[in-house]
Length: 308
Image (cartoon, rainbow, N blue to C red; front, side):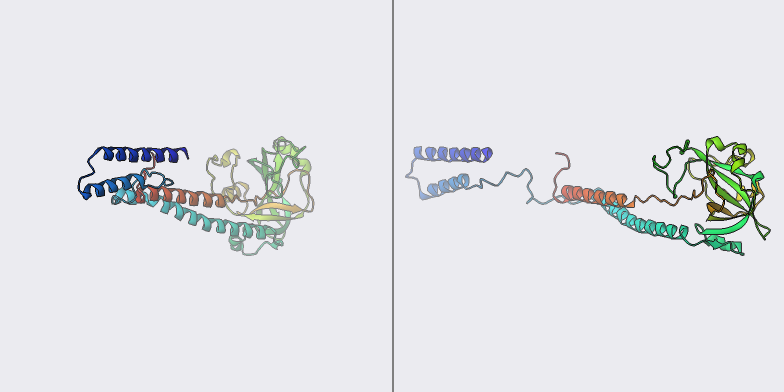
């Protein structure tokens, strides 16, 4: 408000000076001098007190957008395309989670006679009867304990030693009535049970019926060491190499339940939780697209420098 008032008095001062100057001149000049005076006076007095002076002249023609300017327009377009792609990925992940949950919660099915059918049965629970062969047992580590397919909270694992670092025990399983031996991940054990002698008290000697979730071969994850079958050191699920080591068929089940469960190993170690952060990716890419599009419009359409 002060700036408006100050500009008003400056303009009035200029008008007053013009009037004083004209008083000192000879007013007997032709009428064209009076007309010129009136124009000068109107130019000084007529102004908008409430319209701020604009630093940029938008009425002037803008420079033509060059190739570099159009190239920069690709940034908001690319960000918008990535945001749209993340929408598709978000829907794909939701469908995958739903499919995974429906399979793991399916009623147990019998082990098919045609083992090639197993390629389309991953994550299905399979019911099978037989006997464990503990002499060829081995472990996969390190593994954290899972509860209902998810990492546990502190309240659940209270009293369980070193729940974040343990092993999964894989034991060959001879199927009853068939010339077939498969691999069964019996579950999680703490580090103190790494020695086979500590696990003998929890072994099921007799024939038993189990339900296990079928898992297929796993590619080597990044930043994970390679398996060393000669040293009996396993870090990821290489079903073919494990089957060769244990002299069994390449069929791998993760134990879900058994009629004769002991304290250790802890079964049901199938991870069913999938990360779904695509919504945050969608917001990030769309916000970036909107911001860069506004910056491009401001710079190349309005002609306003980005840094003033």
